[in-house]
Length: 483
Image (cartoon, rainbow, N blue to C red; front, side, top):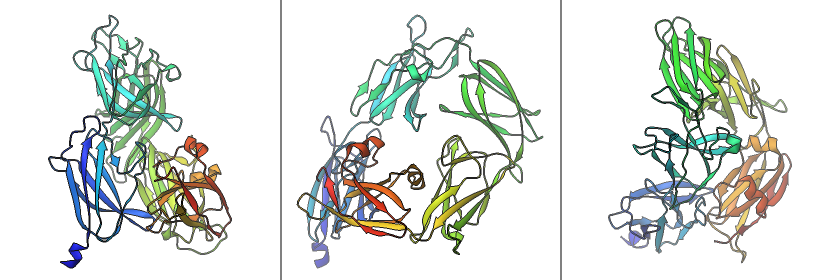
């Protein structure tokens, strides 16, 4: 009983941002900061009046996040919509009250119109974001009986709205058309999505034109599933007894075509196609899946256990969410496609380089084609650099739970770090980065951001550090922007 009386409590209220009304059944999650990371502790739903309470908590630093369908995930203490949130530091018998407001995700709405400015029902429409010099679909929808569409669940930012291809009842083809009345992305008119608001009046009259059609045959004598994928998603077809397949009402452009058959060993065919207007014909021959072996070596020739290095392979084209995990020395069969590779080494090593089995269109990727026997080599170094220090506020006091971001200046090292690293200061305000390749780095600490963009690094007063191989450096940071 005395221990319970000394326990800390954290209570709060969840409100809708604009109306100020309580939000019932919002999922409230509590994480505790341990070392340089946070660990999930408890989760509960707010009650009918938007209230929540976590009781019997030990002293420590905690993070609160709140989720509800249709709303942006909120983190207590965040300064921007994408900020990481600030920790709540509780003593052994503390009581803290937190109010969290949820903002509705952005919406883009408009009308799809025919040549007479009458709404077109059942027309597909998509919202895209530009990332890594490619378009990524963020939302999709279908126009209603009046031709009106709503694209929901959008984070703040710039989007490009485009219709899908369609053949009308009279045989007329409608090409994918961007807002701004163009079929070319370069001339498209962007739309800004904002929280708690609808971007209305984004009307599009699809441009008439000749659509593409793909007809083909899968060779190999096995029934197969054929998948055609592009930036707007995937379509599937099953082969006829003679191996034939067909896709109609396609937008001219770049596609990935893959056929898979149930066999032992698995068999597949894969190719990249650029479809022009009208008919395209192609044949595909089923072959064994490509195989990949992960080879690990130390750059100076020192002996090491390859199984301590882990490689993650994510199929990027066509996209796949769950990565394949392989230890050094292991082999595996892969579905054909384009892959992105990342590696993780134990703290006493660092990733020096990747030797990809085949070049691809983008750095850090490789293509795995049917019947390929590939080897991916990970070169590690046995003398990693490390960086540690303390995050201090304007008065020189440690800041528990402060987010710390690190980025490499050299592009090759940046790719090895998968875009950079981040951590949180512990309860004493201390941060640590281990297993770093030698090179030039910049870092900063702030509660303003959760994932810094390139422009953020240029705008903020990031601190530079040059690390030699095997160096253990210490560097204290001043918190940017305050608590």
